Image (tube, rainbow, N blue to C red; front, side, top):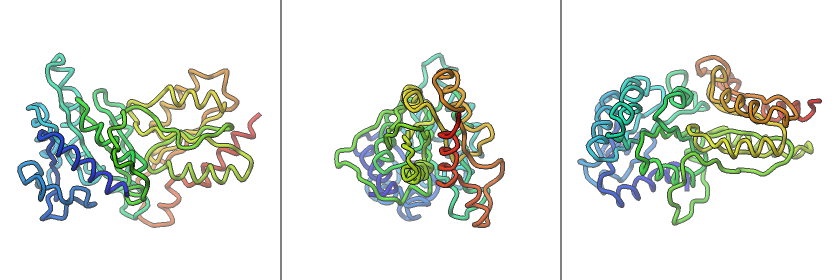
Length: 325
């Protein structure tokens, strides 16, 4: 199935298993099409309008209502149509959802999932395509999940809904309609555990979300050049799987962190610094970071292609590191 179908399957399963699971968001009901990408299609017909609520175009209200529902014992899944629009609800997410457990001395839980879509490559330009996971990874109290495969879309979403704390679930537009194998009994996948997407021995490519496919393509190109690249799919940006990343980097002695988010102050900086601190004397070359340039996402297709880290960019950086003396 596709990632889109896997999200739908996870929502159906979670709502069947637990009557406390609710869905909020713009156009999520069947009469409006089941969400911007159709991922909630069929839910309101099956579970009714009391559990599947189409909302006004008001992101702060969507998240605010979801926070209140979570504190009242429900498990809301709030859909924010596109990640850029999440900025409207930053106060509710950062100052309320993320901090209520802390501010209440552990007396209040906020089992809230915020699903959102982003990703360049579709010419949706600078107000519809940005990856802002670094903002939320910097915010204590929120888990940040970014799947790349249909199996992970289902398993990680199931885990996110079961989690007692707020989870930001980021869907990438370039991965959502790519088919892949999903086990019929696919259950929750633990948050914070990376996936070994490809085994290698010369260099580690550490990535997540839409860049997993680009790293896999680069690994094929590198193999033709005699370089064995290992690909680590983080799955979860926060908390990220330090043990898996450090084990891979120690094995290969070289590492590149690749993400679609802007490189400037991006999540790759934290990961690269951790590798350098933990493995300074064991690395054969400096840790590299690849990310988008310090710019809004361009609309023009040639500029958008240049904005995204391409497989050729990853392969070129890997070859340079493997030649490092």
